[in-house]
Image (tube, rainbow, N blue to C red; front, side, top):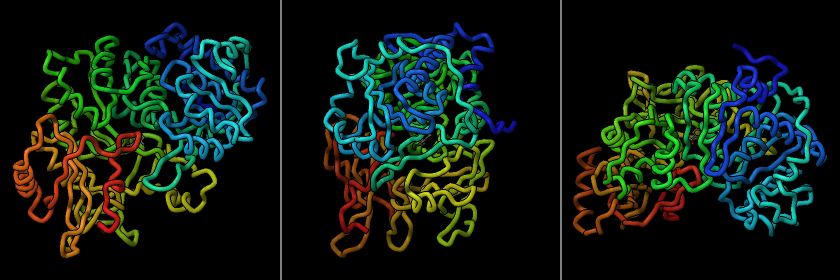
Length: 516
Ligand code: 3SK
């Protein structure tokens, strides 16, 4: 079904649920509050009126630095309703990064959770475009606007902005491996496009589902998991404002009994290694799990299924494509592989000059589909490099097998050659993780005494103290698993690996300056 030209995403995502008789149904639950679809509709209208009272006009930006509580969907959807562009920001940025993205987006208003305000307070005076700060959860104790009081003072009747399906609706800042984050502009039609493709056709999401996501709402992955997908079918979301530790997730599962759990590989591995797991733990309510952010190692997927009797659907998405476009599917799972294109998306693999590569050869993944961003804000060069006509470059290397399944080989810029042969760090890491004592691994190129490039591994152990003998055993283990030239010549034990907020390993932080 094609989207009409005049289209505001909030009509379909939220108002339609009221028309279908779901006004009393709980849309969002956080540890402190529940919000029904009806209450959310009223509050989103108040929010739209509040923006108008503050003089924020259509197409201007409203920044969100907010924890995952019921106020997040009120602000996000209220802004969409007003035709104002919500810009959810990572809640873990440094003050310098906040100063950059707030200035770059020229946000007129900032919605900030009280607990996150201290990280921002010092940079606020340097932002001439920012006129108002609205603090969520301050209980009235703030010298800025208090969210609850401001919302209560706004009327709950308003017209929804008559936006265009192709009009920028919201931005997400995408943090590349280098440089400052880029404001990625998504249009109104894209939200529902991700629900109609991945959520309905792969997950089979239903009205009676209860969703729990480890990824927060400010990530593209979390926004789909916790807001777009459940709202598209009138389901319920559990919001977790805390860090998604294994203990916190197990406790939420016990209390709220989600049917869909959206995780990330590190968390699945940590949950399996959690000492609390030795106690009798079951996930009786969970019917399906998903994984994204980075490739799910095969041993983690197999161990999860073995332990809990539930499959993890590993998939690949990006901020630029808004959600997952390549995925395993129920009844069609191969652990260690990223699956096949999600219905509605096309992908292709290209070599150096842009020519297609044959099955079994490594190429860069390009994707075409209905939820692609329309570009980066104020970054024409980077937009041109990434968005090539209807194709979006991912910067990820994959192989396609004869059955049409894609397997991740690494970031285009993480791959390196050993003895003239390409090595995928991900392949070596997967081999390392398949050893029972290894929790996580990152592999980078390093130079040996002859100045030749060889793999070097950083590993996190599950719990045993490291004994030197393990190095020899691990090298042998990798040689057996994937071939003799790829084994790590050096192995260093670390407490944790550097990662982005989405859980992607930042290999560039481990690379030696001249490691090649
Ligand atoms: O990082 C990912 O893999 C991802 C997955 C789904 C949606 C968005 C993103 C960035």
